[in-house]
Amino acid sequence: MAKVMGENIIEVRGLKNQFGRNVIHEDLDLDVKRGEVLGIVGGSGTGKSVLLRSIVGLQKPKEGSIKAFGIDVLKADPKEMAEVENRWGVMFQDGALFSSLTVRENVEAPMRARLKLDAQTRSALADLRIAMVGLPPKATTLYPSELSGGMRKRAGLARALALDPDIVFLDEPTAGLDPIGASDFDTLIKSLQKAMGLTVFMVTHDLDTLHATCDRVAVLAEKKVLVTGTMAEMLDVDHPWVREYFHGPRAHAAMTASGGEN
Amino acid sequence: MADADAPTARPSPGKAEAGLSGAMTLATLKASEKAVAALEGKGTIDLSDVTELDTAGAWLIAQARQRAAAGGRPIQLSGMTEGQALLIDTVEKAMPRPERKRRQIPGRPGDGLENMGRTVAAKARTAFKALGFFGVVVAHLLSLIIHPTRLRITALFYHMQDAGLNAVPIVSLMGFLIGIVLAFQGATQLQQFGAEVYVVDLVAISILRELGILLTAIIVAGRSASAFTAAIGSMKMREEIDAMRVLGLDPIDRLVLPRVLALVFLLPILGFIACMTGLIGGMLMAWIELSITPGMFQTRLLEGTDPVHAIIGLVKAPFFAVIIAVIGCHQGMQVEGNAESLGQHTSRSVVQAIFIVIVTDALFSIFFAVWGI
Image (cartoon, rainbow over all chains, first blue to last red; front, side, top):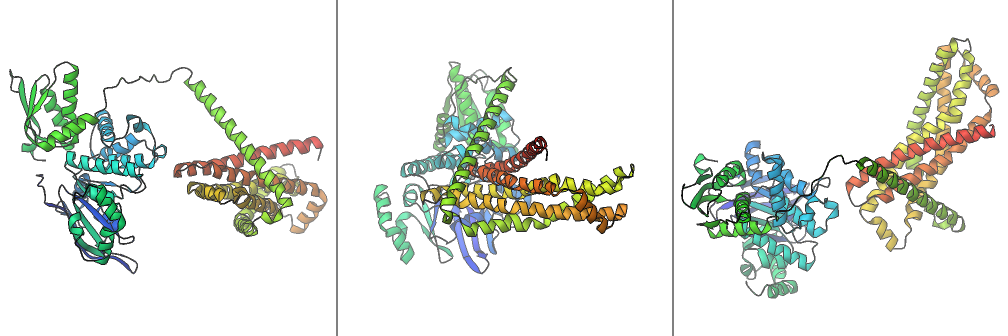
């Protein structure tokens, strides 16, 4: 399992998704390279979340192929699939924590399902993950309903990281957070990504997050990935929606805030 | 995972230096743990041969370092890549400080007593809250007399249909079957004394006075109290109730009163239907089992059974209706922000409603007995 930086760990080819007669994706191609932070942007209803759900196997596409770690997830047998699932983590929009379990039990849940560990190691590793995402130790015994929105997202991230995955999928990680919480979350993602050598696939609307964390951006429009590239490259794209998105007043504010790095 | 990649220790006996190699990951945690344990007491650990390191592996190394530092002989690390150093650093920063765990002594004396006290206090609180809610509902009902336009007619009729009309089939079937059972059981017992004809009195009095209404109330409690709790509770979860309050709409007027009034109007009717189908069931069974013709049944019924029994039965219905609706709505209002709480309160509302209905029925029996009716 050599980890070559820059290889494609997710390859989506010719994806087609359709709800009834409403075609969401058609002939969509996308590569996710190892070690990068990829931001997926697009207007409402362009199927950003649907794309994420298709890749992780929650939405069966009509056509196309999706390869993760070289395995075609649409045709994988359960054993291959389990191996793939061990290597990715998903953070849902509001954390999607199990409401009947404490935060620690939530983070332990994937380890309990996938690994044979003794209870002590498991809870120690869970506590470590919880601390790494910046939650206070006393949060470990709380139930999801007792957490604030930001804490729930962090706990969701801790659960996504429970199996030391190669790639994490984040669905709107900063939506609903206050600016301070959102920028803390950006820093957290960036530092975890650096420390753990993670690949991050992020669906987001947040221009600040894009500037702060993403190495590459993929724009969903016209039912496919219209264009991918760095933030700087996005500024030169000549497509009305992309222009408006990356040249709008909010985009300028976000770019100035990030110190014009791009 | 190939064997060549398995984590191993190079203890280099005699020297203060030692090395680790292989993949130290979550998947190889057991072997990694052994490898690290073999290096206990060394001054420097060389990580240049470690092919893979994840947080679990870093955690093992960090733990060993923490233990060694506590023992006064800190371990230095060498030969790791930049990424590995960063990872170990991150993990070490996140490591929970060794805390003194408070021991929990299981089964301490007093735990049981304390729990009992807490349970009693919680139940008493719930009872007081429910009483308070009942008061609020009554106050709103009274103010309805002054402002009758505040009642939502559409909602009232909707609930009359949903909780009343739609319950007619189940309630009539239930009454019919109860009538059959009573007549059949009564017949086998009374035959022994040659008093078959008293089956009519048995069926009529027990159904009209007690069972018809009581069992209808229990069915409606199961059907409607739970539906009220679920509907109001899910509105509470989605902050709809708060939205109504902010908009100046009174949730009691809008949600509770139509439900209470719908049941008050329709539970007596449902009870009456149950009584009638019960009598039909009894009549049928008496005819089949004891050859008491419907005509005889009717004559015996009219001369042997005082109409006061039927009145006593129906008088109780509005009281049961208020109990069921108020408990259903009150539990709905108690729902907190999660789905689990919705489930808990829904089942609680049914149990409480049925229980209070039966208690009230017992109180009515005593009341009527004392008054001699």
